[in-house]
Structure formats: C-alpha cells, structure tokens
Length: 121
Image 1 (cartoon, rainbow, N blue to C red):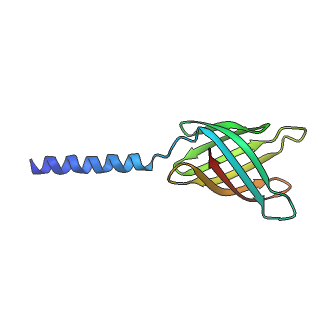
Image 2: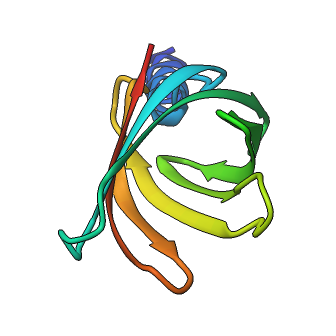
Image 3: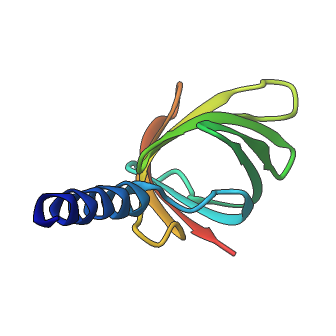
C-alpha cells in the first residue's frame, strides 16, 4: 500500500509541475511600446489584438498584421506594416509568469532594432 501511495503522490507532483509550465493564453488586447537602440529614431506605441491558438499567434497592431508563435514562455511574432512599404518588424521576447507582460527585442530591416515591452490589457 505504501508503494501505491508513493506512486500516486509522485504522479500528482508531476501533474502539478506540468500545469505550472503552461502559460496564460495571449488572446487579448495588448499595449506595445518599442524603443530603438538609436535614440535619434522615435519610439513607437501601438494597440494590438492578439489571438492564440495552440502555439500559433495571429492578430493586428493598428493597421499592421501580426503572425507568430508561442513556445513555453518564448514568444516571437512578425508585424507586417500597412501602407506602401509593407515593412516587417520581428519581435522576440519572454512572457512573464503571470502571462501579462512580454519583454524583448525587435529588429526592423533598414532601421536597426531595439527593445520592447508589451502589456496585456
């Protein structure tokens, strides 16, 4: 009986750890703040709507489309800007334990890169 109890306790601990690793769904409105490393380029702010389906991430930031992925706490997405150029900005960051903040870096071809903060609203 003692061995069965030990197995049940171990299975419960493993299940609890597996649940703890799963992050909150990123489906929500997000506030995105981005600052270029080159301070002569003004920073940017955007309201974004994200939708997560499994590891897949889609959405919009203002008039730009967004596509990416979430793997554990690592998040990567590409924003394709509207307008004439259709430039792409790539964001790579880490989701916090509460699933409410993403901190990371971005690259914007031809303009450099910088850091960003995304806040779940």
